[in-house]
Image (cartoon, rainbow, N blue to C red; front, side):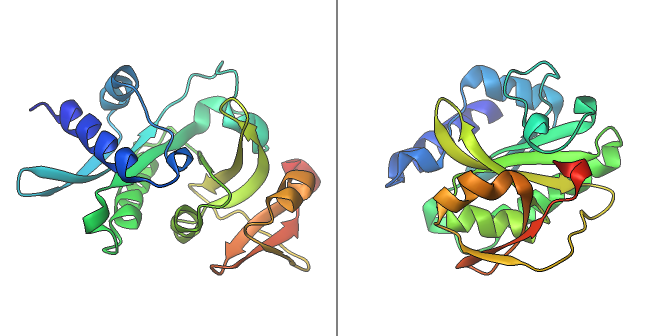
Length: 206
């Protein structure tokens, strides 16, 4: 079986077992072919079985819903997306998602073309939020994306940490209405499993 077929099979298996299908925005075979062509994809195997995969994607600068527009970034050629990750449920709890993320972040940093890694997360997906914050991502906005789905837009600066200051606003992570209403003016800097800690944005990030 070709590697791309293994990834598609794993994606289908993981998606089928999800209670909330909206958690995983699945990709097509053509989209995975483009990801494989760009070269930023990693997999974890148990023998011959692919049990986990994570990938990044270089978006076209003229993409209609480019995440740079929501993240205070002008130079779209310096952006790469953290695109998709999935793990066969029986293998969860081994930090595979974070370890794959660390590996890919090292790869794209060494590549030298990119300054920012951007991604989206369903606001009520606590496990995905924990993963992104462990990797250093910050919430830059919360908006409707992908045909009306509410998503946090997160940013990771690859060469220097995005700094925050001032007094934190403590918001329950599932209070999506607050994030939708006020998120454009704040950076979500931390997540403790229950609360997000937001800090006022500086003017250059708005």
